[in-house]
Image (cartoon, rainbow, N blue to C red; front, side, top):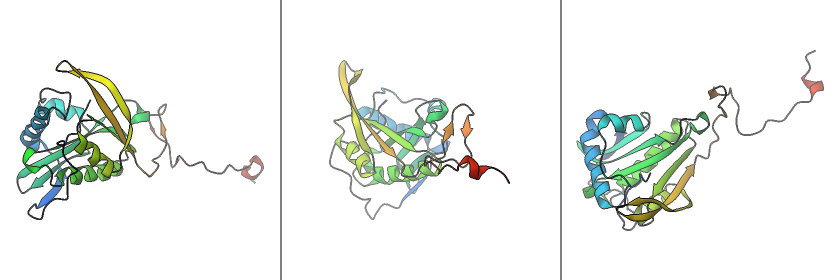
Length: 211
């Protein structure tokens, strides 16, 4: 599902001085503004395959509760970003899909970049190792935004979905955290103790015997 949205213009510059922008956690009270901004993304035709916004309960259940953010200028919500899991399997516990939406009146002012950079930091703090995003090729600003925040283009999923009678491509992007997380054991359903992706040197049996 395509989730990231920015208008199809040149990459957004930094937020202007008149913005007193803060990135804070997204809560239930932000939902009316979050839903309104999401509907603006739907109306753009280049934000998502979705045609209507869900209710709070459905949205809340579909997104991680530890990594969801809003950009706020005073009481005004300028945009939001959140993560949704890609799978229920333990081996993919650290992989999530990105959603970034910016209000129409706040686009082109660095809000999207501030949100995505904060989302990346929060995801690494939560132990995630890979973020992915699906973006329409026509959404050049969103593609540029993700690349500026460390995402790479994995490939183009050609004619992956049909909306309004039109088959559309979707660009798949991903960002891998530079830090290797603890190895996940799907059988045990938990992280193995102090094991890392890096291999440790093996000790010979002779040296490992107890005296």
